[in-house]
Amino acid sequence: MESISERQRSPAPIVLDALPKDRKRWPRSAGEAHESLVRELNRWSRENDWPSTLNSWIAEEAVRREW
Image (cartoon, rainbow, N blue to C red; front, side, top):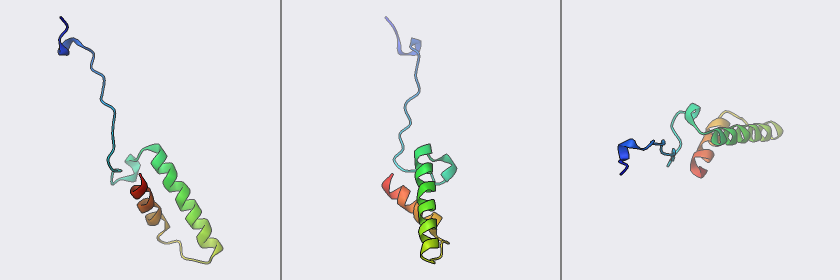
């Protein structure tokens, strides 16, 4: 009879309930969504003569809430 210790153990899949605090550790798709939102917000800011100071923070909050 085979025991548990004799089996090849495969790593458990990584499941994220929330994004890590450090954006460098985000999954690729979350990082791409953030970059896309920042570009879109920056474009809107330029077109509407609006400050873009908080665009990165706004994009991060949006990705965190929807992830």
